[in-house]
Structures are given as C-alpha cells and as structure tokens.
Image (tube, rainbow, N blue to C red; front, side, top):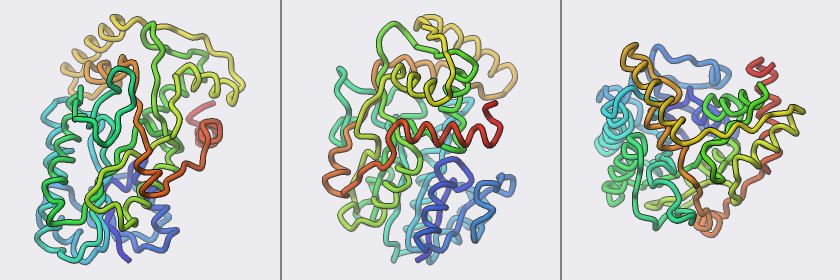
Length: 327
C-alpha cells in the first residue's frame, strides 16, 4: 500500500510518516525543495518536489497512491489571505488533482483542527454536530478546507480528523509553555480558569491512521483528542513536578494580552515577519475553553488514548532536554 503525505517534514506529519512506515506502507511525500528533511531523512521516502499550487506536481504526487494524508497547512501567517491560500485553496487543489487522476483512491484524510469549529460554547465541549463558529482567520481557513472536502464526499472517500492542541517531541508551539515553566514562570491568561483538550502526538497519529483505515470512517468527521479536559493550572503542576522546577504563576489580564498582541502585530507589519503573539493568537488564548467530545471516535473507531498527561509530558520534556531545547 502506498500513501502520499503532505506536511511530512513538520511536527505531526513526521510522526505520521514514522507510524505509517512501521505499519508497512510505502511513503511518498510532497515537499518543497527548501524543506528541512531532518525528521524524515531516516525513512525510505519517495519525494515529490513541489507545492500545493503546482497542478502537474500534484497530479504526479497523487497518482497510484492508495491513501492521501493531507497534513500540510499554515498555522502562522502574516495576513488573512495567506491562511486562506495555504489552508483552503491548497486543499482544494489537492482534491482536484485526486479527482482527475486517481479514481481508485481508498481514502483522503484531511487533518483539520478544533479551530475550524471554534471554542466551547457556554462551557460545553464541542462535538461533530456543533455548528461552525471559528473565531480566527486560521480557523476560518480550516473550516473552508473542510467544506471543500465535504463537497467531494460523493466522489471521493474522505475522512476529516480534528485534533485540538497537540504536544510532543518536535513541537514548537506548546513548547513555548514548557520553556516558560523551565524559566520559572507559569503564565495564566485572564482571571478565569482556562480549560483545554490536549493530545500527545503519538496518540494523535494513532487516531489519524485508525480513521484512515477504518471502513466506517469514510465520509465522516471525527475529533481525536484526550478524553479528559485539563486546566492550564493542572498542566503546569504536572510539568513543574516532572521538570523538578518551581514556577511562579503569572496572571496576565486579557487587556494586557491584547495590548502585547497589537504591538507585536505592528512589529510584524513593519518587518514582514510572523510573530508568536498577534491579535489572531490573542483571540485564541483568551477563550475560557477549547474542549471537544471524542465519544464518536471511541464509539465508531474504538479510539483510545495510550498516554496519560503525565506520560506525555514526561516524554516530551525528556526529548526537549535531549535536543538541548531545554537546559
């Protein structure tokens, strides 16, 4: 069985490539010529050099594969247009290529995001029936990517997977939280408790592959996440215990978050560089809850997470230290 993976050089995509290789799949990866291959260079990969905007390359990439795992996407961008180009139009182009040249595809799996749906409503976890209500350009662009897939369900066997925040070795986003704790600070946004769904990357790729292989998953959408919801206070307590560090809880008022984001955005506009905290990210992190219900994945796919929060954080921190990301 041959699979095409987009985004294989990134955090989630590289772990997915390793998992699929271990399961005996032949790997084909769509990569840019400028992509850093360090996370997958140890794997037997057939490389297709190009991007999601080169029609001929896409047709070559999707030809004669059994599965397409579309993981590539923009999580940081300088403008709204960049998000929609990378996440929406890129997905549409890939779907069009499959429809043109691969009528025997067994499954197209889109790795979307909880952000496509939006934060919890009135404190209740969202599920697959929750109406779309994204609050960021990133979320809107992922929603549009999902809708492109859903329009093709009658023509292609499509499955959509929505992870929440993902952590683990190679991640650089949640890493900022670990780095702060390592430096003795545990940032807490706002005065109210913030609750999140989290998933360790190995559990996520297990769920992605399960959804891709399961015959009942064709034409469906699934949240793949931890069964439990965590407060950032709880995550911080587990992290400080594992790191054997003392961290001061620093409560940052929402207004201050937006002020910092506004200044950072001006800097980004002046320099042309994407920044860690902009208004988009501020809207995301000030929400009271980003939680999702995984009952459907448990019931229909038999999905179960293997790593507790403590297990996952211990492995993650250990890897960061081995790589000297944390001292």
